[in-house]
Amino acid sequence: MAYQLENRLVIGVSSSALFDLKESDEYFLEHGEEKYRTYQDEHIDDTLQPGVAFPFIQRLLSLNDLRDSADPLVEVLVLSKNDPSTGLRVMRSVAAHKLQISRAVFTQGKSPYEYVEAFDMSLFLSGNRQDVDAAIERGFPAGHVLPSTAIYTGGDSLRVAFDFDGVLGDDEAERVYQENPGDISKYYAYETLNRERPLAPGPLQRLLQDLNMIQKIETARKESDPAYQPRLRISLITARSAPAHERAVRSLSGWGVTVNDAFFLGGIEKSKVLKVMRPHIFFDDQTTHLTPSAGFAAGVHVPYGVTNETTDLSEESSTLAVDLVSPETSATSAHELHPVDVEHHS
Image 1: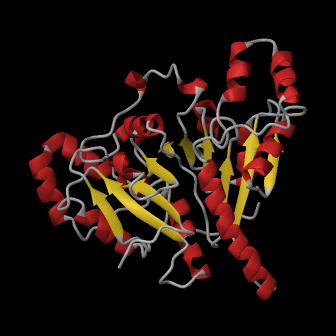
Image 2 (image 1 turned 90 degrees about the vertical axis):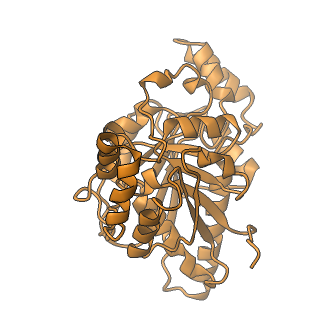
Image 3 (image 1 turned 180 degrees about the vertical axis):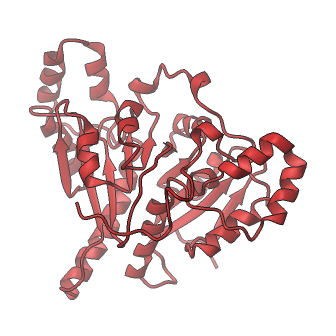
């Protein structure tokens, strides 16, 4: 059967983002690759516990009930540096958690991000910063999943939150801001002058577009079945404030996309909003906005644009060739995230 890409949201997720691989990583570091192979084979039916991106992926896949199973709205592929044999445990864990994932790419030490374009993905999620940087440099939509202890409980709603500049839009305005430190008036003047000109799309603009596609289907379902309650809600959380807010709104309109909520915070700490909202995933181009909310939101760093041009990657923890997260950046442990969640009402 041919692989159909039209009218479908396609996401690639590394095993390091989807599952908690801390134990496997520690075994690899202590015993080496050959014993690691034996270890994974011996534990092939020991189900891996959820990682940071698991709640987002699980709830996103649940939206496939909006369309015939033969034509799913959401397609998720596992991308892994494991080889096919050591990757068997990953796929058995996928099945054990009843995730609707049937496709996987195992590249035995080679960075799998190179296949983002081949599968027409709107997003590549990984626990490996180097892979994400390389993907962004190639112009691919990618995000680095950061450690999180967020706990999501019950229900099937999905809350997705985006920063604006450097995530949905490009970094044109951010560059003006960075080039005029201590003089925000120049930034406001520039944005006011260009308020009717949409920014060029950023790395995750297409992801928002594809999520809007799902929302339109939910709207149609609601019209035919008034009892149906839409499950996907999208929020914009940005440090912009008036008068710079207008260009963000007009950019969204110019791109033909929408959000349910918009927070123009003007310097108020984003974590204050995130603590109330508790999104299942939040995309931002600056880790300074992600770290404070790690206890109540799964954060994804999009290392794009001027704010990331001076990042010292030597300080970033690297992922092993077998696609395992180092202990310092491991996904949360099994008692911190559970596949069955209870709904948080925001």
